Length: 317
Length: 317
Image 1 (cartoon, rainbow over the protein chains, first blue to last red):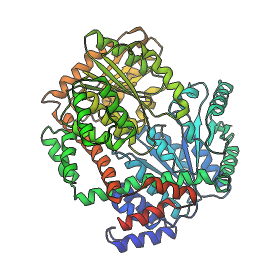
Image 2 (image 1 turned 45 degrees about the vertical axis):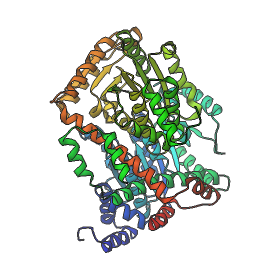
Image 3 (image 1 turned 180 degrees about the vertical axis):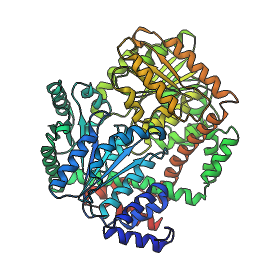
Image 4 (image 1 turned 60 degrees about the vertical axis):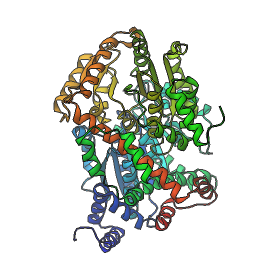
């Protein structure tokens, strides 16, 4: 295939993608990472090309065992004939690549399986860049026909909360005895979790964590009619994963039901809002014919006041 | 004062603010939270009105004792005659307010001190909203004449990394024996920390954590000539806080020096980049005369595909 630039190449790529060609998938995902504007064009062309994948967000503090949960969830999905794509969101610096890769190694047993596709996304550093590329990548994986798309984050910060909001169902992985009970609540994650998974449930402190969760949930003004589930697992042993999958299925059914309409629509609007911001930034830069690289050079040559520069720019806009 | 709407009221507010009137400060910060477009106007008018405050980012995982560090740092600054403003960034859900407030209570001993101003900022939920209001709030506090502005985050996610990047000096608070050594690295925070503070240093595991940090730092391709400092504290006892303040001072001097020019300018550009995105979103919405509330209503009435809606909008843009 020729280098992707002209319109017809994008069309060709999209056509190949919709046929499920792996080469086209890899190329599309790479474009989204490396050339966001072209990547956005691909995602646009796929705006109604979704195959209805189940999109799952897997989040939780580092050390909660998310990667192992994802790994065993992949194995479970494969055992019931579902294809799976994983997007691992790594807000990591270049030199921490090793630590992240270590986690990925466990999943390598799936790399020879054509029904599994695993990809890491690193942050671009700029505001919302990761959200945008995650959204576009999920579009592409959906179009490529994967039955299940797992979006796994490395930690739980606000940006990661934003990211998992694109998921149909979000699983918050916790561990007992780590002070996670209160800390997770601080991170404001309670609102977005549809399922709480107490992993490493063979450790001490499970009843305490369960009690805290129940208390918090009873105090929470739950805006939906979905009662968040609290489950337990020992992912390293594969324990609790079938139950997790069943609970995910229940939540999917709820979302599709008349009862789940408010939540379903609210989430659709939130996705729209995020896509809108991305569109406005992109179009704004085009319109300004603004050369950010040139501006960067100017900033690096002399001491400039960024607030004054923006003020000046706003006057001419 | 009349309700703030017309241009002259903003001018009046800014004038009062520059005189250091507390009422004007509170009003300006409230406007930034509640009416971002007006808030942005205020920040714009202050684009060269900074008084040269020292802006410090205090970040770290929940439970590391950041609030106590901040509290003792306030006391230290006051003891040497510096005025202090604190912006506590709470990416919390409405019903977790209690937990956050609990942390704030410790700082209440400062509330009767005119030289201290403490304010919490909650997330707006939308992409980058918190970054924007933090940037604007820091502008306002700087114009109001505070000597030191502490920006404290509740956790360390990508969005919080974005926020602390506006600081001149960033302190990463860690605790020994919590698996923080590796986990913090995963969160990709190493790159932004100028000072690592091992708090609760009376606990076990300090040498391990120090060793991990030294190893990581020796492996890291440090783009600046600043050697990140590793300090220890027991903030509850006030131990190590004077040393922290001295180290912050050294970093300030470095940033102002010829040697620190590259880093100083790089950071100025990063702030510019974030302000640019915010400007483009704001101007884009004006230009589209886009009513987001109306769109929300439409989304809540029927099942819409957000990707298709954005696609349609992009065609007309």
